[in-house]
Image (cartoon, rainbow, N blue to C red; front, side, top):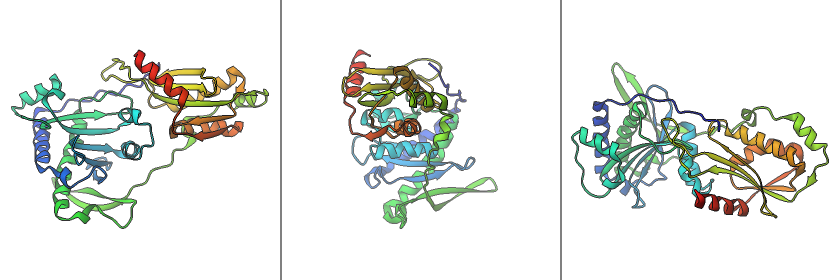
Length: 344
């Protein structure tokens, strides 16, 4: 499997850890989830990079308490996918792209977390009282935050405390006349200090360009098109992360599997596994073309469940005249997935 490694980052100092734990306690003691919902999203702009962290306060539902900071456009997309169920529920854990602070019971912290708290001379007691910091990256196991992520989260918590405190008295702070705009805390530097101001900024998603997945093998497509390939029913296509943790390198990960199945016979037509989380769309697009060439057949239609599958195969199906239909459930692949997870 091709593997894209996350580059190792430096560790934060003890003073930096002390500062962020103190901020976490200050945030927890506000209990701002009593008046802020997880849909009340707002931004904090990074002083150096200008990149926005999109902040989501957790706890209004009464089960999970904390704060997620979704970094940049990719982070915001993962939040929106979670909010609007644009990916299957089983995949939510694998697509998260954020830095998270949660307040846990003691047994939910591991040895490294507890050692850090002990090293700082901090004490916590009770349910949902123990701060826990984690980095979430798509496809990877939730992991300990590094110095860079800690620095980002420090700015986030400071500004979240400012915003939620004001929101308690002024509910209109997070409201705008334009649904495409949100409140963002924007810093400017004056001498050695940062001065933060409110700004209502438009949130825009750049449309993904099919060309980013590279060139399609046009010669292979011509051969398929002129081979008088037989029609072969309705196919199911999907890809998902397998819950089999691979402990390779610094950070464990969950491999991606691409599956193609005949929806009528239940036969698996293709299976490809990868850990190339940056270039997987192109890998799966190439695998789809190779499958068509190998079996010398075209589906009458393809049913899919997620938008990324559409984006990977649509440039191919459009040229071959194969229609794509979105569905709520892929029956054959879902059964295979359940069997695979039981085996693992």
